[in-house]
View 1: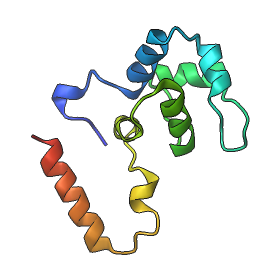
View 2 (view 1 turned 135 degrees about the horizontal axis):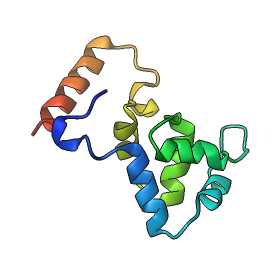
View 3 (view 1 turned 45 degrees about the vertical axis):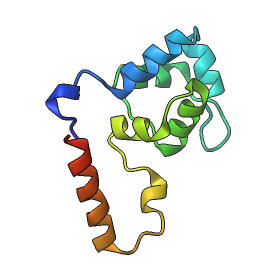
View 4 (view 1 turned 60 degrees about the vertical axis):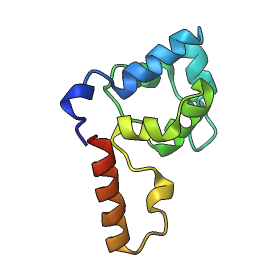
Amino acid sequence: MPLPPHQTSRTLGKTISNKRRKKQLSQKQLADETLREDGQPISPQFLNDIERDRRRPGPFILNSLAKNLELDLDELHLLAGQVPPDMVAGSTDDNRLKQVMQAFRRTYRK
């Protein structure tokens, strides 16, 4: 999902990198604290790729990064171009999903 022109300079990678630096963490430290679904930490190279916007982490890793960096998870999902899983989990009503997305677009464009 492309960001509106006025927000293209704000990326997932820049947001994570800036917050990591503010917390005075190295990439290795943050990578060691950021767990995958199997309980293993992500690699520093994977974190580097995320920070350079070369890779997009899935919802589980986004959740771990949000917790470790004290960032808003919904904001990270938006910057990653993802719909938060809890917004679509078990959703069988296509009409309701369309209504939610239309409301989001109206609010986001303001």
